[in-house]
Length: 135
Image (cartoon, rainbow, N blue to C red; front, side, top):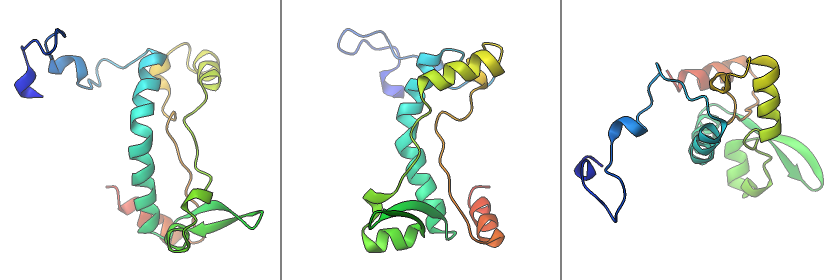
């Protein structure tokens, strides 16, 4: 990307790193931007969550033979049930707007759970192991 800085690529505006860099002193307060970022982040985050679960005996809800049960991610993969897992989706726009208005005084930048997942653990030790994977 640095090689594109200052050049006109296909008639587009020059690349400016400051336009795309995350600046904690300038929070994003635009829901469109937040949801665009969430859409790009969601698949990456999901893979990270699967990795954490694989290293810590994390479990997800799975539909097996018409009933829902919790299974460890490594077992799910081993049995080929990845498509049967119920993963969380990006927060619904209506719910996000409601939360911004009711709870965050119209500050969209306070939303911190547009991308989210749940991992279930049967033992506290497994939860601790998962937390230690991401220092």
